[in-house]
Amino acid sequence: MPFELKHVFASLPQMERGVAKVIGGDPKGNNFLYTNGKCVVIRNIENPAIADIYTEHAHQVTVAKYAPSGFYIASGDVSGKIRIWDTTQKEHMLKYEYTPISGKVKDIAWTEDSKRIAVVGDGREKFGAVFLWDSGSSVGEVSGHAKLINSVDIRQKRPYRLATASDDTCASFFEGPPFKFKFTLRDHSQFVNCIRFSPDGSRLVTAGADGQIFVYDGTTGERVSSLGGEKAHKGGIYALSWSPDSSQLISASGDKTVKLWDVGAGTAVTTFNMGSDVSDQQLGCLWQNNHLLSISLSGYINYLDKNNPDRPIRTIKGHTKSIQCLTVHKGDGRSYIYSGSHDGHINYWDAETGENDSFSGKGHSNQVSKMQVDEANDLVTCSMDDTLRYTSLSKKEYSASDVVKMDSQPKSVSVSGGFTLAVCIGQLVLLKDKKKVFTLDNLGYEAEVGVIHPGGTTAAVGGNDGKVHLYSIQGNTLKDEGKTLENKGSITDMAYSSDGAYLAVIDDKKVATAYSVADGYSVKNEFYGHHAKPVSLAWSPDNEHFATGGMDMMVYIWTVGDADTRIKLPDAHRLHHVSSLAWIDAHTLVTTSHDATVKQWTIKY
Image (cartoon, rainbow, N blue to C red):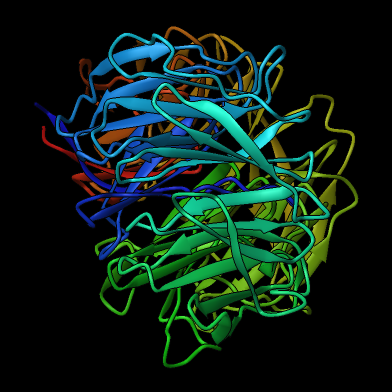
């Protein structure tokens, strides 16, 4: 194989305010599971840089849970479809597929023998179902609720009990199998968000939007106590997770705290304060072996430290929204990947270890469209919030002073020779020392993308008129040389090779063209292969290869001197086209996409 996948830096869970996030734990204790868009993300709990992504759902996935055997995962989506798939193979073969309810799946539970599955959520005629995993035939009825069911759990010991929690402020208790409705638990005054049996089956707990946690007997369903007296939390509680020994549990709340409870005593042992911002609301939690995880509204995954409740051991950051652009920069002998997403968030990743963080301070308020690193080690970004930002890579924080407001929305940015060229709607702007020095209006065409030659004397601007317009940079001005390069269609992206020898251009007629700069921009080669318009382009540091990514989900790596020699990466991100490309070295390509994931590929020629 000329290419292989080297690293996957996964997206964060997709969060919604006021909606609990169910995190699945691995019975063997190695991995944890969550969902983002149509993807199920499996991450290693010790080293979250190791991830695997399941992309077979046709709709947005809401929850995924391991079978107690550890060999299968059941995942449910917003259309009510449940897919049960294999975890041991790389291919994740589909075992069974069912549609037990006709709406969004909110929670899934397995019996301890991995034979039966309960599914609840929002349906048209019923809010839940319980069935045999291999035939789909019903083993009871999930009834007794007037509104959608948020949570379900099955006691992991015989005799089996099933319990559900609903928006109608009630919880229901079932005996089985076949599971039959026994009685309703009417202790909460607000939505009941989570219900969980303890691992030893002796207790059942419920948590609600009224900030209360009630404890019941696991076999009879009789109320035993409540945690924390009057109220367990100041805000609504979204998730609960038991300790493996069934003596303690953690609860995640909208009051931006996670609490660790001694269930026998009914008191909080520790309170973890997660912050003061709205994005610090806690919407999910998981207790697995010695790891205590919670998930913030921002999507950040926090590893809690019992000994130091105000500082998590580590916080996993990344993107929850689609990534639009990407660049690579070497600093202190290490390669870093910088990525910007459509909510304005910029993240940087250590290319080897996957350790990542975001810049501190207030950054872009809208989609980051393009980014590049300039000679002064500033990350230059342009965004749909009509600004250009220069952010120091050494300080790693946004500076309020280094923001340049544009007259119209910038689409593309390029840096070289001390200059920055910004292509905005209807104008070209030349910047030097973080200030505008020249603006060119009335272009007579709509400019899409602009690049400055590494020599810093020429700027090439591609338009939707199918032409590349060449300008010379004289002093601090752009002068139209009157020279244009004809392409087949509207230009989507272009780039100079790092030695300045070639200019590669892609257009919406699916053609990539390489021009030889020294020969007065004569056509060196044309490259055909994409079935839909290519949208991103990046030169390899060896100056002999460049990669293009298109709407046809394909990435091609082309050889400048030989149009027939090419490497094809099909389905690099499965569900979405590649939105941006960058090279770490001559044999490592980075791709990113609207699935909010960053992938690295090893390329062999």
